[in-house]
Amino acid sequence: MFMKADMKNMLLGSSVRYWFSFKNSPERIIGGVNFQDIKRGAFKSCQIGYKIDEDFSGRGLTKEAVHCAISSMFTDEKVAQGRGSYCSRQSSLSKTFRKSWLYKGGS
Image (spheres, one colour):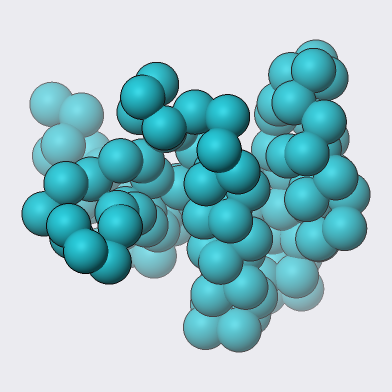
């Protein structure tokens, strides 16, 4: 059911999902960045979510993936602002959010 709803939202343009892997093993997906609730028009905003395989956590890969995905959304989708939640102990990711067009939502 989730896959069906996810595909429908992507086709409607209200959701975009990026999967990431290493260049030397592109068949192994290690994480993803998702933009949902994309608002067009004057507001131009969205929600962001991310995940990474626990074997690759703590290596700065999420930060890099989020940064690349945000750049793509800003350039390709013309989204000007985003909202994301993160744990306050994720200091490097919180810096990425503050330096980008995202503001903190949640805790």
